[in-house]
Amino acid sequence: MTQTLTRQLPLKVMLDDSATFENFLVSSANRQACNYLNSEANASLEQFTFLWGNKGVGCTHLLQATCHREDARQHSVFYVPLNNHHEFSPEIFVGLESLSLVCIDDVDSIAGNTEWEYALFSLFNRLRESGTRLLIAAHTSPRSLQINLADLLSRLQSGVVFQIHSLDDTDKIAALQLRATHRGFEITEEVASYVLQRSDRGMESLFDLLERLDQHSLETKRRITIPLVRELMGWHVNK
Image 1 (cartoon, helix red, strand yellow):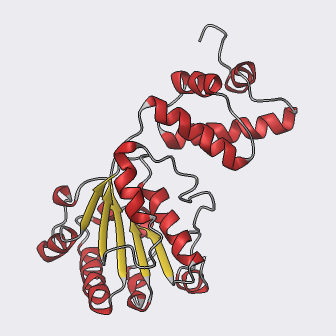
Image 2 (tube, rainbow, N blue to C red; image 1 turned 90 degrees about the horizontal axis):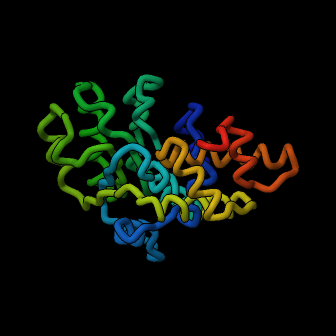
Image 3 (cartoon, one colour; image 1 turned 120 degrees about the vertical axis):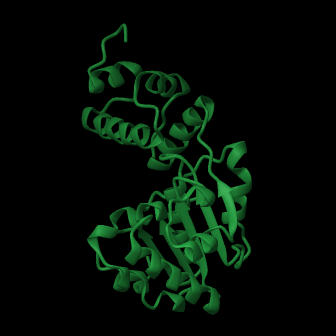
């Protein structure tokens, strides 16, 4: 994380170290969006890009991965999740036009909030004038946002738009195996399939369970097997 980001965001908001492009399972449906975001070109992004998708599809991961990549390139970046906007004020947007990239997550969270809508509209105009790239994510498409400020809504509909799609079961199993590899352990396809069939199918919940399995495996000094999963989760043999 850049010093600029740390200084300007004195909150308990930090980028997730595991939110990288290498740790994101790219399905065929999301390949175009991921290739666009993870281009090797230094200025791959258009001035304004909008990502949207259902909760848990990975929009936050991709925003943070983009921040990590740009930070590694020595570009000044800023990430703010607006689902926590009640913890700070719109003044957090002040001065961001001096940066290279601004990533704003959960923009739909401020829909209908007049103060925040005007602050975002002002920021949008300043970023466009300075040439700072803006990457925004939401749980709905730009055309479905319940934004009251017409000029802001128009701005939010003006950029490059990508929908991030949910993974199918095969991809979810592959995503679990990829995440396990990056955490330094292995999970077989059989175990991953067993977990998928019996737990919450959202990726956030699946990754949380994977972390618990890793910790339990380390504590018990046992490999991650179906019996170990049953033991940790309290699942009966016939479940």
